[in-house]
Image (cartoon, rainbow, N blue to C red):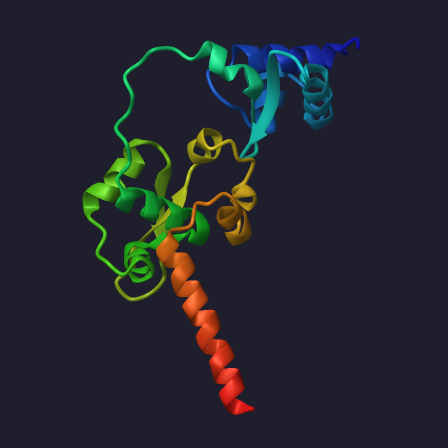
Length: 195
């Protein structure tokens, strides 16, 4: 497949970029007046099945190593510290309910959220302050970032796994499954009592 000059310009801009770019940024750097989306699609098709691929994450485009080859390029490096269970739960709540305030996170988790937990997630670049809720006290609300999407290989938040996906992967706690079974059983007993 021969690329057009415009597609080659888009390819060059993406190759030289320090990070993912929005289509408008790509067009500006390439000096193109037209939409770059057809060129991005053509390039993504062109690189499909190769050692690198062109991907879109959160509306931004960049080249990355093909997922099936990434294990070859792993480098020995200092591992970032592991997230605590509280941080993982907090991140999940923010991802599934954003924008969400600290009080809303605490209500969902059932326990107080330490300030350090939110700080760790912000330092990782996975969450950001997203403004203030228009209610008394105007609490700060949090949302996920494009780095969050990129790190977890998501194009958008719609790609987050649903409850059935989590259950199939065995990622739900046995306690959660037991509680769900108990709730289902009590609903069945209630229905039988009403009959």
